[in-house]
Image 1 (cartoon, rainbow, N blue to C red):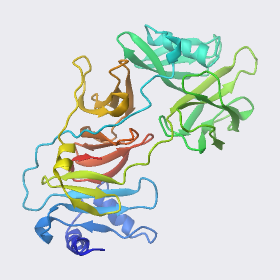
Image 2 (image 1 turned 180 degrees about the horizontal axis):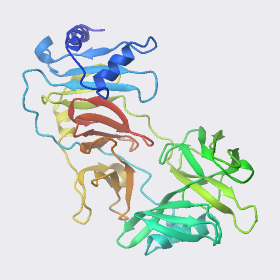
Image 3 (image 1 turned 45 degrees about the vertical axis):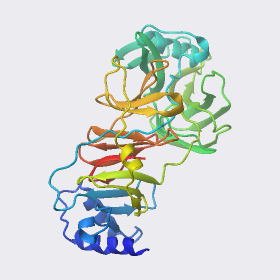
Image 4 (image 1 turned 120 degrees about the horizontal axis):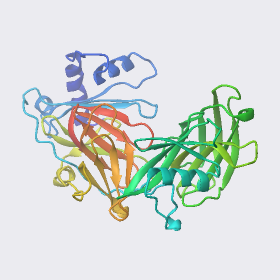
Length: 403
């Protein structure tokens, strides 16, 4: 540990003793509870410039678990600061591979004027449910049943791709609940498929189909419940991780009249770059610094760091939303639509929900250069990351951040 880090650690140790958490949800309370556990790492602490007379001037309290997603960073203003700076919108270049719907296939050159048409065609032509019956449409979701008599429900998720044109982004069967992987999770050579199910003779089929094709390059099965919902789990070997795939868990039609009677469907993205190890953080007092998740200030802020927090993208007038962020070589834009952080493709007009901020609306959004990892600060000054699946809270006390 160098001299600056040593002084930061000593200063924040004194500062931490003065902190009294307000409630059980407070990030500092969580850190305090973790410190009492012998298998957790020692709390690392960064101090304010007013205390240690260094250029950074931001108080940061860091804790890093050995478990995935178990890190928390807290940034607080110097005690003399009373007015937070104006919040700016960060932007960075990020590609993405999740902008196109699963159905219709791009090669089909086909459009659907209603959500129901898209859902019915998806069930019949993609899943082989040739006797599929439409149920109720609620928002973006359309119910599908296997036939006129069947009551096994599959909820097909649709999205408006352009004006009065719809596609399918996934599906969930009531009786096949998939916990892992999550939608848009990156592929890996070996993946665990787990959840709960009930099916004929307890057997749930597993398929992996390359994105854009109806043929599969992996066929397997897993055993769940036969008369009531029971857990299932199985490791599968993924043949190709460098292209997007569609994961389908299904019950086959025992009568042989059609292929599936119900199915849960997820888009999985290609294996990509790991989450960046550093980010630029702006604390409540306006100080900017480059941090890593191990608890080190990398260097004082530069003009380039400040610029990363100040360059907004723009959405066209026909797309309502805020906090737009450019999305790399695919030319797409991430933005907040009032409920979700959503992706807009200017080339195709496709709009796809990515993730719903769990606690509060974002005030800034950014993503890394690989296009796989989102970063945002919400109105509670909490810092979040998302790489597919559930978002992870990684910090508090920020007004802005960028990769």
